[in-house]
Each structure stands twice: as C-alpha cells, then as structure tokens.
Image (cartoon, rainbow, N blue to C red; front, side):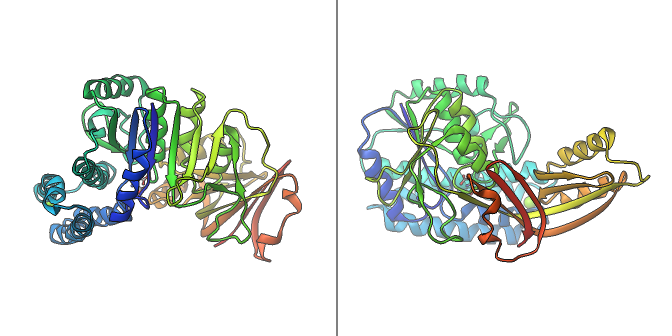
Length: 417
Ligand code: ASP
Ligand code: MG
C-alpha cells in the first residue's frame, strides 16, 4: 500500500488533474490518494464563511458562485463529456447552498469546518469522476465519516484508534485497489465535520499511511523536493535529498512551508518513509524523510516564519516572572490557541512570540487581567540551522532585530516583516 497526496497547486487546473492520472497509472500497488481543495478554493471558502457569519447570505452565495464557476471551468476543460463533471459536484453544491440559506452562523470554528470542508469534497468528486471517465477503477471515500478527530474545530487532532477501524473497514470493504479521500477534513465523534488546520492535508496523508501500514507516503508538490530555503525568498537554494524525521520536524516547526508540522509523528511512529516529489517532473527523485539517512544535511537551512506578534508581559504587581506567572500566561495563551514560537524571560518581563491568529485580541484581553501587556505585530522570525548559524547574518540585511537567540547549530531572529 502506498499513499499519494496531491495538494491544491497540483489540482488547480485540468492539466493538473490529467497529470494525476498519468502519475497514478504508473502505480501497481494498492494506492490511497489524498487530495486537497483545488487551487485557492480554501481561501475562497473562508470568504464565503465570512459573509455567512455576518448573516449576509446573498454575499455568501455570490462568493460561492465564483467557487462554482472556477470548478465548472476546470470540469469544462477536463472531461470529454462535461456533464459527467457537472453532475459529480452538483448535489454537494446544492447541499452547501441550502446549508447557508437554512442556518445562521454562530460558533465561527464549528461553521468554518462545516462549510470550508466542501472545498475538498468538490475536488475529490471531480478527480473521482475523471478517473471513472478514464476507466480507472477506484472508490471515493468521505473522510467526514471516516477520519475521526476530537472536537477542536479548525485544528482538530485525529483519534487514531477510531479512525483505524473506520478507514480500515472502508478500504477493505471497497474491494478496490485505488481509493480517493479528502485531505484536511474529518469528523468529530458526534458526526460534525472538522478540519485539521490550514495545509492539513499532509497530516491526513501521514495518518492514513500510519493507519493502513503503508510502505511509503508521497507528497507531490510544485517544488523539486525539500530545499534549504524558500526559493521565492532566498537565492542560491540547494536541494536536500535526504532528511531524518527529526530534521523535518525541526524545519516544519520553525515554519518551513514544505510540510505540515503534524505530518512527521504518524510516520516516524511506524518508520514509514515520506517522499516529497515534484509534481511537474515525476521522474525526478525529490527528497526523502526517514529514520536513518546516508549523509547528514551539510548546508545551512533558512526558514522564515511570518505573521508573528511579540507579547511583552510584566506582572501587574511588579512581582518577578516566576512559575505561577509563567503558568498563568501559558494557560491563557493555550486557551486562546496561540502558537508560541519563541520565549525569553527576564526578571520582570516574559517575552513571548506567537502566531498572529484571529484570537490574539481575546488572548491579550484576558492576559491584561494579570499582566501589563505590550503587543507588537507584523513580525517575522528567521531561523538558521547549521554549523555556522550564529555567525551567518547575511540574511538579516541590516534589519532591526527585536530578539536574537542562539544555541549550538541554531539561531533565531525576531524582526519586523
Ligand atoms: N485545502 C486546505 C488548505 O488550503 C488544506 C490543504 O491544502 O492542505 O489549507
Ligand atoms: Mg443563512
């Protein structure tokens, strides 16, 4: 059994979907295919949701029409008989419109998952119908019924045991060599749709790989593999052919966009290799992440993480930053789901850098009950990994550094964007 994951960029056009067919045609093993929403559909669905939450159904349906037209465009180009494609998404679109009309948005996170999850439903319906047109026997699976998660809407965690039973049964019961399922989406135990966090389809692929004891998981991407830096930002990037699970976790947690941070654990736990391969050149090897590698990474790695906010917290009563204060601060931040990316303490100030999520204002409000809070937004962290990290300052480009931290082989700089 292999798991292949195709991201939004791979399915953003008819040409991409055709390329999936040509890649899949080379596989003789059992195959589970995980697919994201097409192109920028998730962003568009977030706009549909925003209108819906404001109670503006007309605007929500208007935006949804754009989503529909985009998919219809791909269908028109892809199918010999475009009716097959239109039929494939027709009833989901009607269902979604009805959901918007019949309901009033209250709990943002819950409605996010209910509405935004349709992006993946539409993409997999289209790919599935196209497989059928091309005579590729397969089963379409609904991960809103099979991938069981907790109820942490918008960032749900998979419940492995429950999911194992359902996915195992669905794959075996399908009797097909090839199954197609959605990335990013699942269900809580009460049957409410959940999502795993933006870019979460990688995580889905890893979980499915673990649950089905796959021989490997492959993420097909629009990059040549894993590079030592983002080529859109840095010049002279170098391809890294092999990484350990630990290398990959470090990179992902520092903000490298190439794989979702939660992807590694399910694979490491079963020692399943993860291949990152170029969708546009399927004959190239790309990169592999696994337990042991033949050659350690010998180039510096640069990772940029944007959209950060720095919170300076000083106890209101001028007490020192000690364990009670630390515990209160982190409890509040955790409650508001802030992702902590950097920490520094002094006698009277706790400096915490967090991802600038929509719950930041609420978190600051609550933190203000205990601390004087000073917040600075629009920051980014540059992480440099490698032997010469501490002296490698070229990429700071003379910019003001708010916090610098160094440990052996690792430097991190918090700067303005
Ligand atoms: N479609 C989702 C997103 O855009 C999940 C994914 O692509 O991995 O974030
Ligand atoms: Mg409504």
